[in-house]
Length: 118
View 1 (cartoon, rainbow, N blue to C red):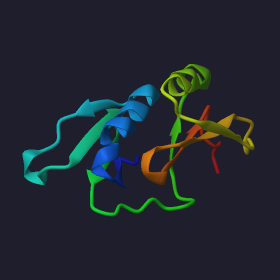
View 2 (view 1 turned 135 degrees about the vertical axis):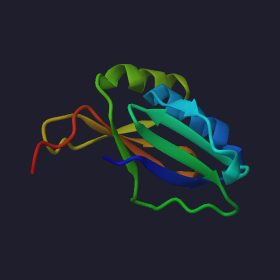
View 3 (view 1 turned 180 degrees about the horizontal axis):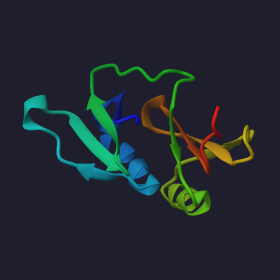
């Protein structure tokens, strides 16, 4: 189980990124005070996304976080209503996949189902 992923973001992108995560089904969770300022945590089904505000953040050009979202269509509707663009990708295992352009150049993959067993 992946417990969390941390994404470096510009502080000005934090609220917009929080909107995207909420549309996917993530809710804010408390951050330990010992971690200081500029960190926000979100959780869905035991998996967390940590947003860390840094100076000159770097978003990998092809790297991304991927989340299973079923049903996918209502989530895409919420994202479109918030102005987020989603681009369909080729299905690899018979399930629909999209990439969402997230704040700061990050990419988020949403899929209807995970890959089957290897």
